[in-house]
Structure formats: structure tokens, C-alpha cells
Image (cartoon, rainbow, N blue to C red; front, side, top):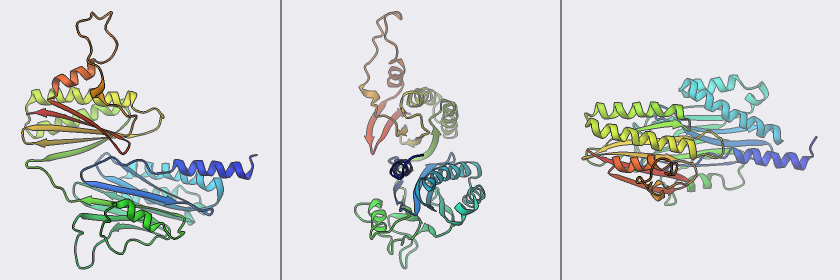
Length: 336
């Protein structure tokens, strides 16, 4: 047996592991997530991308004290993710998660699920217990000027009385809601911006897990994207191989924690060029800093590695890299 102090320490560590993942920088979505647990309630929020391009947002409060409640919250997070992956419908996923919980946990549960499509702005939600999930509209207007402000909260949290976004962005809204000693709450403020596309902008977003088996699916998506738009075959062929190399490198070398991650890929057709943007939350790595291989050496004396990045540079017209909010952002451009 362990003492109370050790059990409380373990509870703190488990709840810290339930902090939401970092949100990838995007042109169309901003997101902020915060939660505060108490001695009687375990609270957390979660968000992840479904394969169809929708964003899943979850807020949870679970009654219970000590380490058992924290462990139950961790199991519930995995359960809700699995249910949303299986059913893809907010109501069905919520019902499935509740059905799998023991009666005491289900009776003390506040859970909000929202699925949002950044491309169309549509959202679908389901809730149980004391929570809210939906769009906050300004008085007398159909939409906020900046886009849709969507609020997802579980617990005794008052939603914003006005959808005006502070200059500090969504985190200011979530921080304000948790002030005043309010505990046992998990919430997310989500801003779906109105698109401001460039002339001729035609885009598609895809999500894959950090698994090599996922790479062929994205390559097929790229081929279909190019074919549907009548893009020149040579351009698409070279970009396909460059994408294969980039994704494979991220999966093989980008993640050291052994956990599950999501890699986001955006495709855009702009005037006279095709742009791919890859975002991952792995270790920081700038491929532009890698040394060019010495191709004059024979194979026996040539260092291992480097040829893939050399090929990417040779088939692409431009490669750019930046690190933002814990995410690697690699932009590859091919002129058409």
C-alpha cells in the first residue's frame, strides 16, 4: 500500500497527463483549452482530428475523489476517442461511452462532445450532465464578424455573455471563465474564421496517425486531388514522392515518446503553383539545415541518409520550415 501523500502525487501526475494536446497552427481555426480539477471532481478537455477533416472537441467533469477518479478520467478520455472514431456521430459516440461506464461514474458525469467542420462551418454536438456545447451568437446578429465562436464546457461554467473576441485571443475567454475559484470545469473556446482564400485557392485538409501504414492513404489522396483538378502529371508525380519522404521521416524520427500523434497535411492549388503544408508536434527538426550529400563519393564511402532530402530539394521549387507553438510546419511548393 502507498500513503496518502504518494497517492495524491500520483493523482496530480495522471491529471497532468490529461492536459489537452497542442493545437496545430492553422489559417482557419484558433483553439484554447483549460481545465481545473478539485478534490471531488476530475476535469479535462480533449481535441483531435477525424479522418474526414472534422475537429472533435470534448469537455468532461467526472465526480470522484483521489487517484481512482483520475484513473477513471484517463480511461474515459480513451473511451470517448475510440467511440468518436468508431461512430463519427456525436450523439452515438456519447451514448456508447456512457453505456461502457459503471453506474456510479455515469451518474456523476458531465460530458460535452462537439464535431466541427472548418471547411463548412457546420457543427454537431451532444451533451449529458451539466455542460454546454454550441455556437454563441451576438445579440441581433446571425454571426460574429470574425466567424463562429463555439463554446464547449463541462461543469459550473458560465459561457461568455458576448462573442467579442479579446485581443489576447481565445485563451483569454477560457481563463476568465475559470476565475473566481470555480473548480471541476473543462472548456474550450473555438473560433472558426471565415475563409480568406487567395484568388484561385482550392484546398483540402487531411489527417494521419504517426504510422507508416497511413502514408499510402495520403499519397492516394494527393493523386486524386491532382487528378480531379487536371494538374500536370509530372508535377504531381514529383510531389507525391516528396510527400512520401517527408511523412516517412516524421513518423520514423519525429516522435520519441512512443505515443499516438496526428500529422496534419493541407493541399492548396494557388495561381500557377501547388502547395503542401505538413504540421506535426514531434521534436523540432529543420530539414533545410541538413547537409547536402556528397554524390561524388562511391557507395562504400557515402554516409547513410540525406538522399531523401536531396531528392525533395530537386523535385520541389521551394521548401520552407518554421517552428510555431511546439509544431513543425513544413511547406513544399511546386510550380505548375
